Image 1 (tube, rainbow, N blue to C red):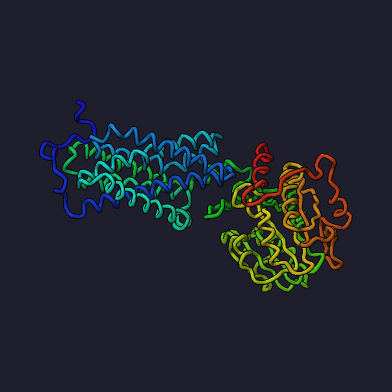
Image 2 (image 1 turned 90 degrees about the vertical axis):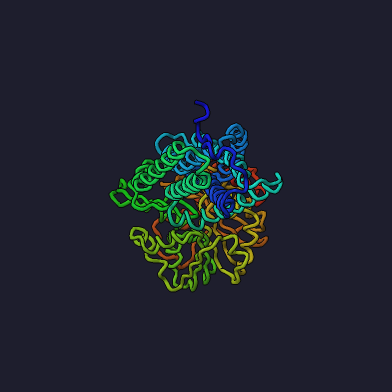
Length: 532
């Protein structure tokens, strides 16, 4: 009975000598190694990216996924040692399981997050299982390579890992450049699972077809076909599943949702208590604005910064064009440059009717130039200077965002500032995240800016803070409105005067400035917002 498990050799092939395989067979097996390695890395990247979108704190998510997977790969390699005697069938079975678990991994974790609130335990389990199966691949593949042609151990390892590492490179590049744009996270993982099943099962069973008993071969092929059928069925239902799961995360009906290479964009729409339509934008689950009160936020962000010179204005972030709408209300603004990382966000601001109604088609104004780039990189090569700069980034809850609140970033910003310019930075909530807020102010001062912090009430956000800054060692910039300010719904000089006063329990704290090497604002943000 024990000799019928997996791949007991057929009688005429039990001792088939190496070197009797068809030419090109070894290359075909190395190609399977290449594809399986690419699939394995895509699973790893998909898990880390999903965690960053859903939970934030990308450093923690990446660390947990990678460390758990690498540990599990070691366990998987040890577990595969007894299977080397039946390497063909064992490898095919491993790939069937890996295709199923890896292909469904994103769906399983999304469901665990949306319905079960068990994301972190589920992520650890899925990462461990995927790592276990990936780790089992290498010793089994090494055994199969040696069956085709005996080599010195060093040469065999070199060939194996060359194919494995190059495959990982291709998988790593395909994930952001091909899979995410073309399929999205959920469908992308399913497609990779299907490729994994074909490459890992069909190719290997075909190469070693004379060394595997027909019954076992048919059983493994049937298993692979079953996995492909499951993945195909889920692929067909993926959009409905994703919509249903995503809706669990939001109170109001979702009217638009898409996952880009940079972020998860969701727009909801409902009727507010006032009877007005309430359109809300969420990026990676974090609320960016509510149409009911966004004017409070954007008036506070824009108009104090434009109380000085404003011929040329730079907006960093703000791809929804709501801050831009406020800037364009000044007739003496000649040019505005808006730099936003995600083309999908500005595309929505140009084409999605609820956003067009809010931003008053601001992106169509001939004074506006839109640049799609990472603001940090763009500043290093920017060639012109601006009278006013508005920084409207999401809160610094990931490493990628924290660098945009760093001392180094504000030093780069100084290169594009004209004399007597003014800078406005959205700083998060002085009430809910006071250390984060005062760290942003400290970072600006560390970079050589004079600062004037202030706060306003935005009902959708609660208490919200901003930092008005001016380069150089002069006095803090005056918190005021321009003499020719257009009519505003929320802000006036009296409101601004009150906004500069902080209650005793939210006055400046002894916190660290944030730098690239010590992203203090990321640490503060993660701890302060974790209970909200």
